[in-house]
Image (cartoon, each protein chain N blue to C red):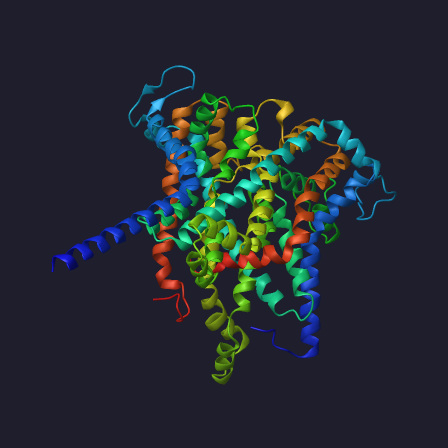
Length: 278
Length: 312
């Protein structure tokens, strides 16, 4: 539906309303930024203002140095950089199987994939702890990397929707040319999947970047802390130094938001795939 | 005669071989997921079910208890009831409010004449902020003495609220934080709105339907598939919520934000009652499955699929 053109005053009122609601939504982010740039005396005042008196850029450096954030940051990056390519690959591969090959048990298995979305972390956390412990993976980054490597249900669902939209003629032509299944996936379908692969990559990145519970349970060694764990530790130690807390929050938010900024059309367009009837 | 039979048999054999190859190929492609499923889900779940019938501190040998853990949570654990009520209250507030707010914003944005893409990104952005950072930002927003929300309330002549330290308010504060992430379902509604054909509205115009009538008779029914998707995903997520409470309130004040998952986490990783925690986790799992099943069952009464293709 296109927006119906109403009376001019109505259009103006609508726009004003949207701007106001949007401003309210952005306010917490603006407040975080502003606090990150303030001096403590501007923070603990009964009449706070959105703009800092003076811009204290050094808050960022101070916060960064107050904890080994470089290390936490590096750990998070390792997890994200190792697991994201696997997530992209495995999800599209599994989705290709569901979308293009009619094998025995396919429909039941796909229902199972979707069904696993209802499993709460609470059920698997304890056994996984024991399993990782047996495998010597406690206090390594693996418990953060492994779960995403084999294809998450939501990503498989998205990629399957996308692949089902790719015309079959391409596969048929390739088959006649003597391409194997794998070659069809690798050389034809995967390159065409680029939009959905980007979407999967961004979501996976954002999820892993923010993941708190997994490292909380499986990582005790501070040298292996990821950013959220480090920030939580920092919060407990510097509970009232809000300028530093907000400065480090800004830095942590920066990566997902930048990534989203550059991929927003793909991500928001790709999300609409999941809106299709299930 | 025998020649055709032999030919048929050969054809059959080759067809069977083709089927077999097809099956193998299919299972090969889904094998990564199968591997993850068996080792990271199915195995752990079975293990968890078994230890839910035992008392086990992870070090010694598990002691078989039968159904004791399950009986105990419903008869002699006041914290369990607390956690159950807190979680249900949170779920039944967050899920409907999120659906309503997401639809409202999507409808509003859909009527915008300029900058749809810009505003869409603006509303989506908060949902990129999750976990600890989300908790920190809102902990500061809700600060009773120096936070901006109380400042605005005071400017408006309203009393200050002890958002995170008043047991009557803290849970609602967390609901507000959760609603800030409304952008991600909103995007789905927006794209569903864009696909509604204008013919429906023209027909409604001819019938003399007003704006509100059009929303409830045309727009809303056509959004119901998205509503179903939204309700189910949001229900599953909010049932297991823990991080906000863990970081912002620690379950307090006075256990007013003591979520089910927090109780499971504490029982398992603070008190090392692995059997009891597993039993509680399984009860939660069953509750989620039942609720999801109920919603899916009910969906045939309220979800409308457009006649072309998708519906039956």
